[in-house]
Length: 319
Image 1 (cartoon, rainbow, N blue to C red):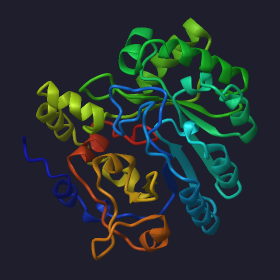
Image 2: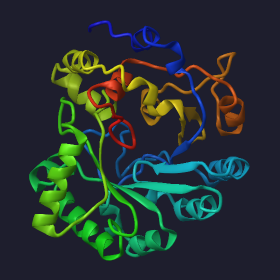
Image 3: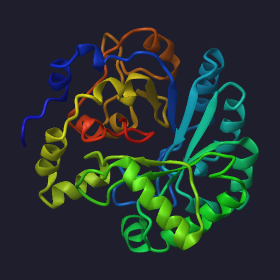
């Protein structure tokens, strides 16, 4: 494996860029339960996922948000809607958050008890980020499972009928189907909008591109196919210094199902929690201690996925 030291790469530019600045977004992972089992998933989400955030941890997060109103809440999983406490968590959070984003896989709308979820989203005026890795049935089903594309299209049509993509924000999250970088985000967005509208009459606001991080099931795929070193080399060789000031971990904290803090969802998948000065793992109760210090961000090789090409983050390209 080639020696790719992300921390040293950043320090050669400006060591301040690998320090936390100020909290704008709190990303909460409600667990790895999901009604899909995607080939690229970095958190091993699946129907049998048993890591489920408890109401007790949710209450601690709400207490933090009440002390720090105005933060953007980014809710993810797994499939976050399948956490039994999901709706109650959102209802409490909406009182103090400037915006609530939920990352939905769309097909959850057709699970038992979820039939009116789209209407509930409309009532709450939730920003939706919908996963759809391609506008063709073959590519989506290959990555996410048979029948996923058809249900996803049906769900997008439903959301459009409720005002999403028009009066309410509906973004689509794209990730490549293999070991390559996403095409330029603006170009892909034009392609998605053209094809989804022409074939299905679907509209949406923005396309967000996300580079696959070499973690989870995607990492397993790379190793099994002897492509891990090649992929890391691809990411590192496409490092873009202009991206570095804008990496999401400088203004985001990620919380896992147990209430443990991470610099991002990828660090969570890599098992790299935030630690205090004596090496103790920090949890939601310690968030105040973290946000008021310019703590160094924990980095590893997978961080090159956020700084390659146009950059990558949970809200898309960075330039």
